[in-house]
Image 1 (tube, rainbow, N blue to C red):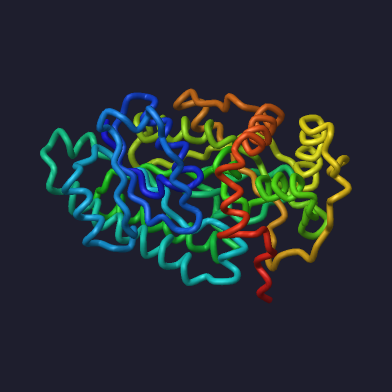
Image 2 (tube, one colour; image 1 turned 120 degrees about the vertical axis):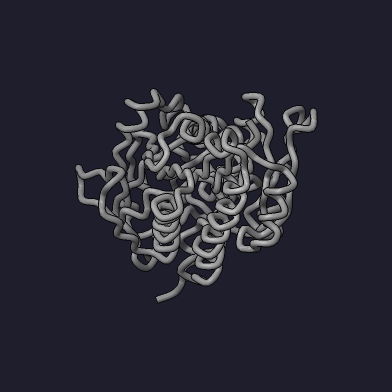
Length: 350
């Protein structure tokens, strides 16, 4: 199959592109190449004419339409999004532009393209919207959101993603566009821009800097290794039922402070000569961010039972792989730390 992957130079998109190419598919990567678009080299996966990069904004209808006509994909996987909650607090406008307007434009361009396909191609075509568990809001202990749970977004980021989800549903119900959708829990793994908790903690610890933890570190997230997420997304776009949504979870709920302490222990083991050992002495509790949801959790029994998916990595193995990836890939993250982002605190708005 040939896939158009939006945001394919970003964190999750990078893993999706690699997974699809590894399965023998062709990929067109449509990405604006923002600060978070690392676009790492694909090596042998990028050879053979099965990969193309198109630098464009998903909110540019003319550009998206041109790419669709030029490459004629069998399916669209729409991952492009502004994704960092802290940045959405400091500057919501970019999130509305990319996540809401961009999704609207992608849906409209996809609808026009889909309507022009022959019957066989039209039947095969899919528009896959990739979303987040944050649309369901903060949950009480023991509760988990299923696919039809009420949306209760509490941050500008979550609200923009909730709006995108509703648009995709409407374009399916109103116009018949063959949409499938997924909502995932917190991803971690290689190539994650170091503004997010896990890479920020790893790199700060390596440099002997403070490890800032919001509040008391009691906020709970379910953690999903990005490679497992990529495999789940490929399965949904191929075999998912049109009009349905699938939750994707790692089944690994932890408090933020538990995650940070686990990273510190892995670094202590990997770097016995580090002058910063024990690394957990670098932990520093800081003022919480505005509107910080206490707990996210999704019920993913549907994708497990209907499509047979389950994660390969548990949190122990996934965190170990992630820590060692950052240890082995300084050439990727050091220019980011010295240029684009130094690890400074975001989300100061009140």
